[in-house]
Image 1 (spheres, one colour):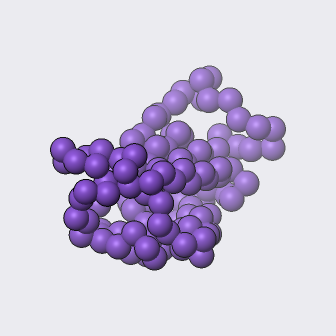
Image 2 (cartoon, rainbow, N blue to C red):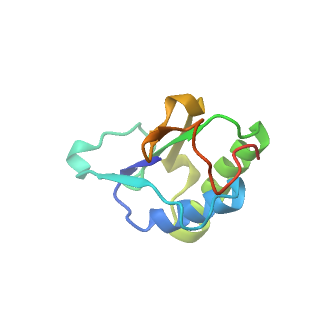
Image 3 (cartoon, rainbow, N blue to C red):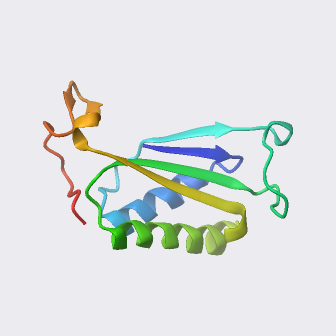
Amino acid sequence: MIRIYGIRAQLSDLINQCMVDALHFPPDKRAHRFFPMDLDDFHYPQGRSDAYTVIEISMMEGRSVEARKRLIHLLFERLDAELGISPVDVELTIFESPPSNWGFRGMTGDEATLSYKIDV
């Protein structure tokens, strides 16, 4: 589950590919929520530009520190290279919770059989 606060809709494809590459997500697993904001409603720290973007990623616990860091670095690199969003304009947060705290398809995360691995 990914929340994106910003003004660039093309982020979804880029973020999805980073999730596939860093965490081995299936390419069709995409649960992105965009919260578009007018510039007047989106206040950001001094030294940032109008491209300032906040990305919050919620996921089940289990990914290694290396996998999470790989995801963060891929996002910074590709946002800059492919969309021209400087790393200084990006803030990323990963929130993890145990599978038992997730509910989807009528069951909890620890009851579900997933088509992908969590322990990467």
